Image (spheres, rainbow, N blue to C red):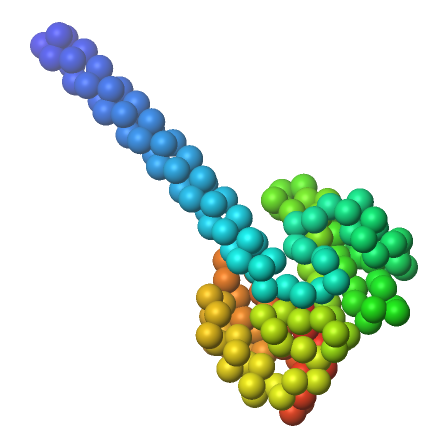
Length: 167
């Protein structure tokens, strides 16, 4: 009888070990998948940004080399740089858990020279919303101005005309 009990206990340990290893492997694969999806979305977004060379994920050093120091803005969870002459603000995340840590993570535009998905400040807002609906971004159910894909959100603000874009 002791042999049977020992065998059952050993069998349970083996099954639990296999289950634990399987869960770890699945979690790793899922983590890699999410990371790849985020990178693909970031690349997709950057292909559709026309903001004077600024791209999401660029380092703060690259931003400063491109546009200069700007006005430093203290923030919660990071900081920003405001470029008054370009009517653009750029945020750098300070969240060490973010894959964009220390990099450009948000851009806010009020400059009609720049665009996101070929949407400019001053465009008809209804047409701009329609344009964004043709992208890989999906409109947030509870909002008529927010679109999201993974970790990224695009906001189109204004009345009849687009007055601000944020990504």
